[in-house]
Image (tube, rainbow, N blue to C red; front, top):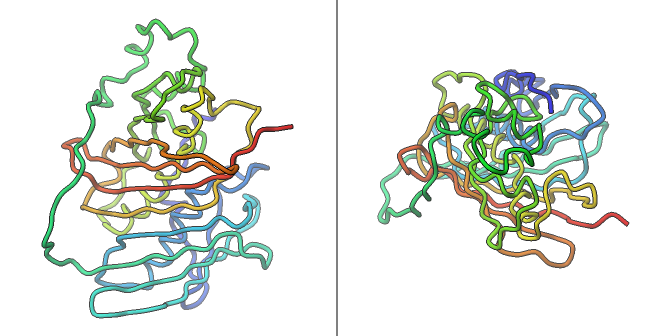
Length: 291
């Protein structure tokens, strides 16, 4: 696992080509496909640049084919609606003339709510308590893969380099079966973000794609490093509920309610430290065993 930090601001800083047309680039150019969170975050950033005075409240994305990190990505925004309360944008991501991703983002004005409720945050230690020193005291420490141990070092980034990750639950990474598939971890960008609410929404959209399928694998005692499995994300959805800063630690709680027909679904809730629910996420993926 690379611990090189990548500037999330640079990833989300698209080049305008002409009205409703933007160009994005990939960090860490290599043979791996483009990270799905990058497509989500960049598409949402492109859509946000065509809307004023309204905050994104939901995004729905379909991954159509893998992206190539070595090739710039063109984002074409189509304004579908600008009503009194809502605006809707369709975004397609294009490489070499082919659509690799299709996204719809909905924006909403701020308004008072008739109903107000949320799920409660589950118990979890704070990220400051999840250090490499504390991890080394666990009986299972020797079984934990080296790449997972590094996540607990301050400032250490995930494989994409832009997000810090502190897992709460270690069992799924050493093959422990979890019947519910429930996995908790803390996330935040490696870099501080400016005071731009739209940018924080895009940053969380980027981070929300991080390792959702762990929840499916955990129900069968499989790990994300299991070479017997082939997994590919098919779609991704995120709903934003309440204001937040993406560069503060956020608790991501995932589970998997179903898997069937060569597909598995994972869902997640994202909370602030104080228990405020800020976003909900869902993703389905194709899951096959290597022959």
